[in-house]
Image 1 (cartoon, rainbow, N blue to C red):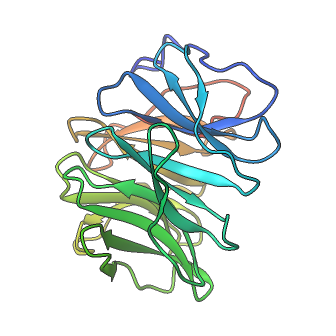
Image 2 (image 1 turned 90 degrees about the vertical axis):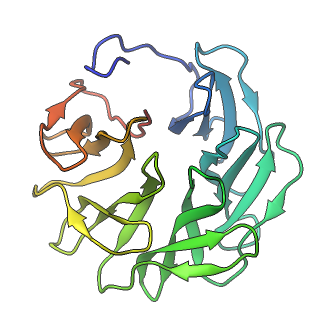
Image 3 (image 1 turned 30 degrees about the vertical axis):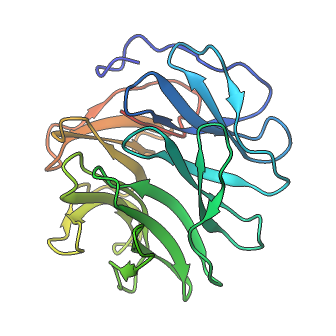
Length: 243
């Protein structure tokens, strides 16, 4: 759809559920997840809905795909080894490499704009925290360590900020922080659930999902939380967004 919420176009047509879309860096392709074959797998499709291909073939669930900045690789989360870990593959679904290996669940990876780091959510000691993985040497940094959950991070285009969802007030709102975990800012203040936030390509806007009007819809706001606008209005459930 257009950035004003008009021009909605259906790209996939199947009996399963398709979600978590992510644009390729050149905006020519989308990766997404689907359970059409009985479990969650990763697919790629052209921007116009043509040339759909399945990239993963496993009995486990493969979730949360994210493109590398050069468009040549995809990182995702999978429980194929028992718990959810991070994996990397090429655009054909080959050259698979496991990136994390621990007893926690690692999910929702996002590739940094310069390509050197991943930020992701880890289920640790009964809550979600944000971690950063340096791809060059595998060094892992714990970014958030609070009594609350921090979930589904996304990088700003300049790599300086991370947006995510957190629940210190008892419900999920949208927050931002510096890429080192400093300068935490709360952007939404609503009793409904706000989550799955992503940045616009120029870094001035943030898209997110919210149930504040009784149904899960797509909203847009400035990077400081101002100028909030509802973009979708339909009886269906909107469950994934990317710019």
